[in-house]
Length: 298
Picture 1 (tube, rainbow, N blue to C red):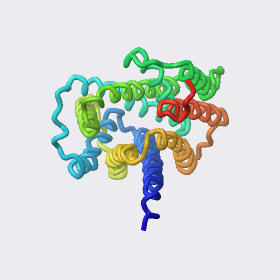
Picture 2 (picture 1 turned 135 degrees about the vertical axis):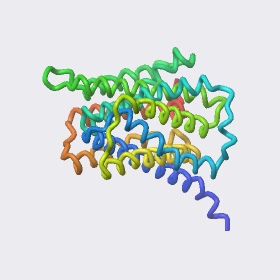
Picture 3 (picture 1 turned 90 degrees about the vertical axis):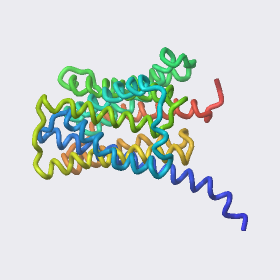
């Protein structure tokens, strides 16, 4: 009779968490597919094209079934271009990092994006960043140093540079999305970024694409389809449950990346990577919880 009503919020939260975890599994799968296709010689921007062009299928279906295509009307095309440029910076550098690092290390570098976003919010969005947030950012970047292992003979300079550049691009994209989201619906932001990525990838065609074999072509298509599904799952998780509840589960990507890396390439995560990633994750979760009101002390 009245016993079912209180259970609904709890069920919604569990569903939101489940969708977020599933989205992180999809992100890990995309990363693994990018690593595999890159090893087969597929050029970077060709992968960017497939990642975006074939993401249109699930994204367009999602928009059609939810908001309708009327949400694509925009008065801020320049802002969408800015978001797309920094987002593509994050995507291309992230794809490059995967070619030079084990999957677990590449995923760990992506964890620094929320920390960079917290630091960038002050100069770009004029947000007040308190001492607690700055402390979390500093602790997080100590974790980054542990992951990088800046010791001669142990540091992958190229991979670390691409990993940090990819995280910076992602952080800038988060900041621009926060500002753009004040006037633009989420469906439009995702659609125009996907369109920009498709066009940017296609523009690289004259500079040397490869003709993939059937298996590689299938994996390239999967990169786009699974990437599009990941974006939808992320959106739905935030629609169903509060960000402070679901965002900490982004760090399950490390588990998926470690599992795929071990099963496919026999990778064994370095202890320093795991320790540094845990420190970065703890800092990121602390920032999320403070921003969503879980911590009440100033």
